[in-house]
Length: 484
Image (cartoon, rainbow, N blue to C red; front, side, top):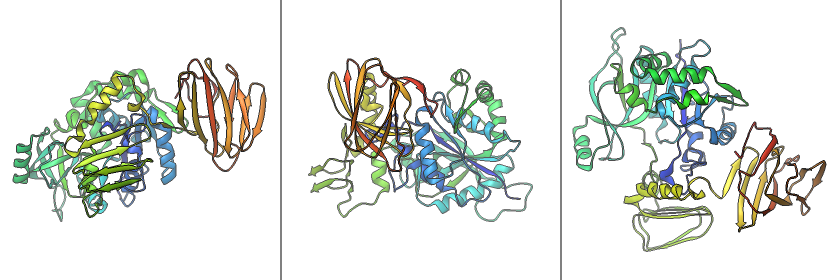
């Protein structure tokens, strides 16, 4: 009988180390940083060839829910549970609620825990390691996957291998065996990392796990009972919201924050580690993307509108504008519509200090891009001043914005492509290309795309306050409240 495996995709991170491309409201797991698929989509596709695998459980941030659902619909599967965390509490509570969801139908499957923002280049090696771990996890072990290091890396935690661990109640297994976990080790300095590499007994801690749902909850009850109780209360009071499962906010917010490693794996007597060499990278910095990408003859990775002269071993990424680089070596340059990052490759980890300063100063560049995605489409600020703002709005076919009003601004809408159905007070009108209308301050209004092609329009706002929180919603097809 094939063992049932439920992948759990942890997609709640903010990815600040890849700023300015990754933002709090559009983090790296939702970006196509390596290949045509986003990192979330690549993660979901990764286990497609695994025997006994079911649709995954996705754990994500409330603010990312519509983008996550849309990306899953684009690549499949679209019917998997999407659990919304009311607040970030690290990986241990997220995995607990996933275990409760996986067991809700009376099953007790194996959970394959995968962060949504990792790169695995040799997927066949990864799947082979999972298959190797299945009988051990089914027998009650808690498996972690340790990456065979190829350099003295100071940015990762390590796992020191113990003895090999056969299954006592089965015939001797063919092939490699898991190891007991002798020790989890914090991120080392350079000299210590080099010594670890020399011994051959240390593996990088990947943050990927395989264990039976009930076994994880048993160990959590033993080592972090308050956490489990909060997760159980939050899950028991969950609410269904369209495609999403909303955990109870009050109970979940009381939950201690901790990782799977600290809460369970470092304490359990049943931890095993399987070494794996699969071209793994957690893409924790721009230099990591340079390491795993395809270089040109000068050792560069160039993306988009880039022109170089005497540039070597650099990563240059343009989203739109021309980047002209001269005489650079070992540098990272990343351009977006509202920000440009320039850094030496050795210091790209320090970009988080810039993000922190942006947040302290209340600047939008830390949170969102100039183009902001919504379940109905997107909008992008083109120009703004004290009392006006110009946006480009794109509405997907058959999509509808909420019925809403504003206290502080009026709006002019000019259709440049497609057809718009517009509710303006008591009137409903149809506009086509090169036609426009005016929405007075305080008027209830709604924008719809009844057509089969994207609707594009220019919106000119005018008024004393133009913030996105000046929205009063009366009806919404996506169950939103406030300005989200």
